[in-house]
Image 1 (cartoon, helix red, strand yellow):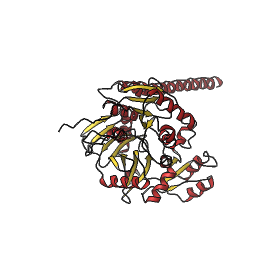
Image 2 (image 1 turned 90 degrees about the vertical axis):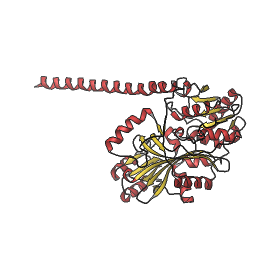
Image 3 (image 1 turned 180 degrees about the vertical axis):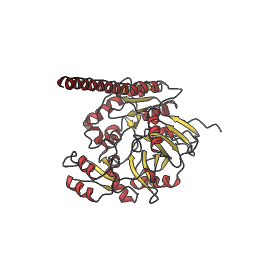
Image 4 (image 1 turned 135 degrees about the horizontal axis):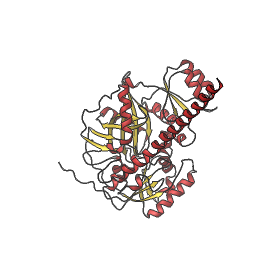
Length: 426
């Protein structure tokens, strides 16, 4: 059956908003394509003129605005308002990171005249992006989550190290710390008490970390939920999927995933969103712990996820399209999710595949064959972002190999000189 085209309001543009320096972001490219293919004029904040997003054929214009995430909020709001004036008409905002989502929510009053965005409670996105805030909300509303400690001193970590069951996982307490001086880089697996204490000595008198129960991969499954909720916290698009591979392995960005129906998980996510009163796009990471049969919520991203384009229903709706339709007063078409549809991030799935094969780990519930594949970068109707990604992705790798070769060469030369001196001394 041929589906009807999605009838978007082409008079209302979209703006991809990002804070921080991460030019190789396939989620932003996916959002530009998703709305651009409907005829929606698309704009984007970019680090420079040569990012993959900046070269998409569906981008009407890019705004080069390098940021670090450490700027004062007033400066970032002023920058956004300046972009709004250059666009010249209200645009739907599509944040791609927590900093942007929090900025929009906390400065809604200043931004409302120039942009369209969900009327989320002002302080909720920041609380959800915080590991501690999320854990408190989960506890309050009865949502399972891994056992977690929020240490406030080295002495508390010492006491924990003497009784904890290792391995454990360390994460930055606040999402924004990755832009500043993070205590740990991403999710860090810690094998024993001595390793924990060695790391903790570098965290200072006020550790900005959480220490969390490790859910062993042999006894767990990684699930994801992407959805869009309207102003009444009703789901207008809700999808469930299973993560097959990530990079770095088991703890990083999704490299390969499938849409898989999971009514139980969908109901849990919907109920939680209703209770906390969230509206807008969400990207949730859950881990099913087979030891106790519970889905445990690990991360709540109050914005579009980088892999959102894997999720689409029979009516051609993804979460970005759902948001644009809803905020422009259009009906969001209903439809079953395209179960079995696969998502592949080309530049990180190959190393992830090699790592997973070495470990012998396979993902339960992943279909044997995909019903369709969405590539993160390559698209027949928009190929420039793919080649731009390759150029920017390969160059640092080549530079690193050259540096490694030169350092080894210098080391070999130094060793030869040392050996020659020893022989002369004899």
